[in-house]
Length: 165
Image (cartoon, rainbow, N blue to C red; front, side):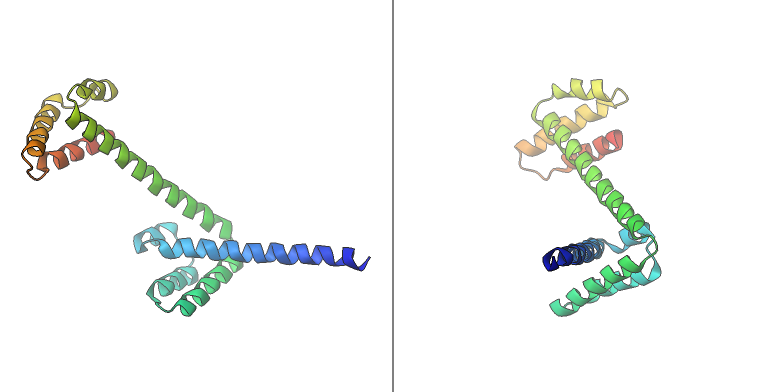
């Protein structure tokens, strides 16, 4: 009977420990963000200041204690789930932007490798300035064959980014 009485306490302690670790991990994710990204999250002032302080620290022990402090502040906040939701949204947006940039790079590389891909680009984006794209493709191919700096390739990327984004 004594063993059964101890089980709920053990599970609740483990649950509390897992929650503490989850808030600390959220704090670590906050520490990795840049200051403009942190400002986008509209964090409570106390948490924002603690995150900025953690970025300044260099000693491992001090960083660990600061992470714990940030986790505690988040647990004590009136709406910590909102902070985590905004953080996930921000991280999702960053991943989405990276995926778009990779798409643009693939278009550029395919266009330079095979000029026939231009038809696919026109089908996908009818508003494209075909004259300009053709010129940039030719120049990028020349630069590639003569080992010149990829000025036209970069310009092609910029035009595609403007078109796709």
